[in-house]
Image (tube, rainbow, N blue to C red; front, side, top):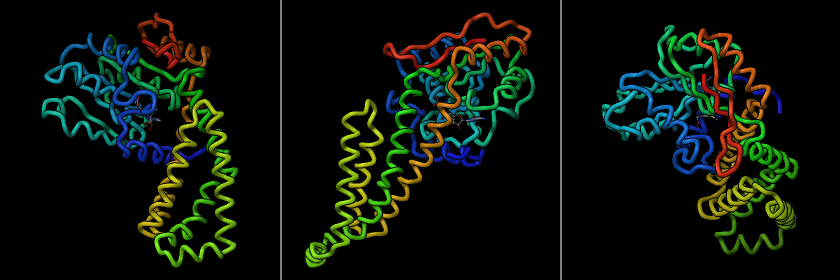
Length: 326
Ligand SMILES: C[S@@+](CC[C@H](N)C(=O)[O-])C[C@H]1O[C@@H](n2cnc3c(N)ncnc32)[C@H](O)[C@@H]1O
C-alpha cells in the first residue's frame, strides 16, 4: 500500500469515529475500556483536583473523557481532547450542562502543533494516540503546554500487543480478499440477485450461462473464505465480509441493484479505511528500544527527570500496551 496522505489518514479516522464507536478497540472492549486499562486511567484521574486541566492527545470519541466523567459526573477536572481527525463524541450530548462545560473536543488538530499557550495543562494523557504523530515534534509540544509541575501519562501501542497481532492478521485478510477479488465477484452477482424476486426472471437465470458462471465464481470464492475462517485465529473480518455479501444480495432482491451497489461501495470504503488504520497502528507500535527513546526524549525536554520506566500493561494476561509516566 502506498503511504497515505495526511488528508487520507484524517478521513479514514473521521469516518471511523462517525460510525459511533467510543474507542478504537471495540471488539476487545464493548463499551468503555475496563480491566487494567480502566483502572490505570481512573488512578491517574483520581489524583487530579477539581479545576485541574487535562489534555488528551489523539482523543478519538473520548473514551478517556468518558472515564473521567463517570468517575464523578458532578465535579472534577476539565478535559480538552485534540485529534487530527474530527471525532463524533455523541455520548457528550446526553450529558449535563456542567459536564459539557468540563469537556471539549477539537478536531483537525495535530499533536505536532498544539493550539494552546505554554504551561496550560496539569496532566497530559494519550491512549494509543501520540505514537501516531511525529514524536520529536509532538513530545516537545507536550512539554511546552504542560505546567512545570504537571504530569504526563501515556498508554502506547506495544509491538507485541494483542491489537498489533490482530491488526497484522486483519491486514493479511484484506490482501487475501483483494487477491481473490471477492467484492468484484459480489458486484457481478448483484444484477442477477436483483432478478430473484420476480419468478419469471429467476427462472430465466437457470438458462443464462453468464449467471451460472458468476454463481460458480462466487461459490468458489466464498468456499475459500469459509475455509480460511476456520483456520485463522482472528477471522472476524472474513466473517463480516461474507455477511456483507449476503446483505448486498438481500438488498438486491428486495430493493434493487442500486441500494445493493451502494451498500457494497460503503463496505469497500470501510475496508480501504481499515487498511490505513491497521497499517498505522502497526507502524506506531513501539518495541522496548522505541519506548525508552520516548522516555529519554521527555527526560531531556523536561526539567523534572522521568523516573518511572515504561512497563507493559496486561489485560487478561495479554500485552496491551506500554504505560509511560513522566
Ligand atoms: C487508535 S486511535 C485512539 C483514539 C482514542 N485515544 C482511543 O483510545 O480510542 C488514534 C487516534 O490518533 C489520531 N491521530 C493520528 N495522528 C495524529 C496526530 N499527528 N495528531 C493528533 N491525533 C492524531 C487519529 O486520528 C485517531 O483518532
